[in-house]
Image 1 (cartoon, helix red, strand yellow):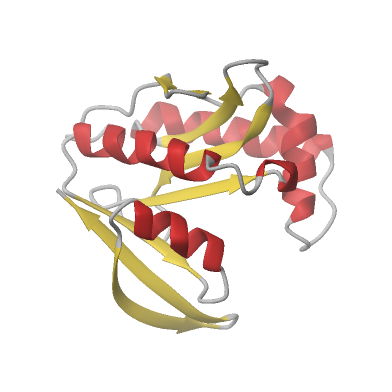
Image 2 (cartoon, one colour):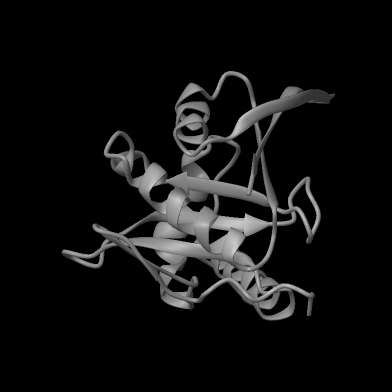
Length: 166
């Protein structure tokens, strides 16, 4: 484990409840992974990723939380604090919603709760890395107080690094 408090397993906002992924999330998670447009993912593929994330949550104290609408328990996507391109001390926030959940402010609402929880673990800087074409994600990060830090390049092009500090 780390020198940081673990991210709470359950977070609540006005419209959402955020909890760790469970095996029964595999069908909608496979749909989300496939919606990326990078290939077709099966329910078994999704189960494998959910199992791997459970290990991350257990061993690092950070990881993904499923966004569920309070009113009907409908899964909308996930928001996570992960190592990603960062470090365990300065991890990265990530979020991804099903296409049907876009445009309702859910990403901003969930990311604000997860970001606040990440800072409450004792961390002082959280990163986000986003492709410059991803205007909706950049708008969410702007609303959360992330500021552009630098740009790197990989085989897929530019990556914008943004940071939020407390």
